[in-house]
Length: 109
Image (cartoon, rainbow, N blue to C red; front, side, top):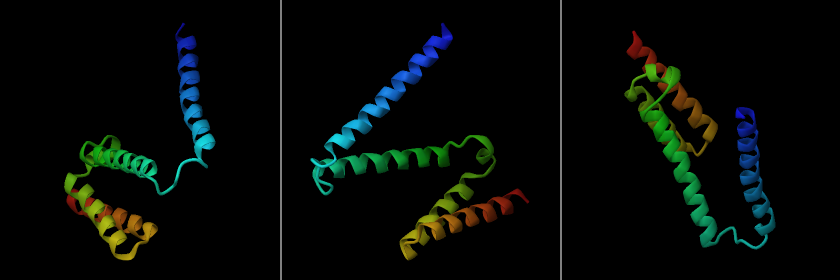
């Protein structure tokens, strides 16, 4: 019985994901990429990513829990500062990780 429920859950998840993707393909030509609907969709998507990021930063799990909140936020702020300054995502990721590692190492010693 448990195996049937697992397969049913997998099938329903597939149907839910596939139906939205199929709807996107069908409506892609009818929705303006600069319209109000797409602006709302982008805002919701960005807010969901920001929410997950804040959850990971403020309430981490795994090995990240050993680092202090200050180290995690310093890495975030350094990365945001670099992306605002230079507009280069790979550079901002590298700087953010570097700042986090340096501060986490200094705090552990």
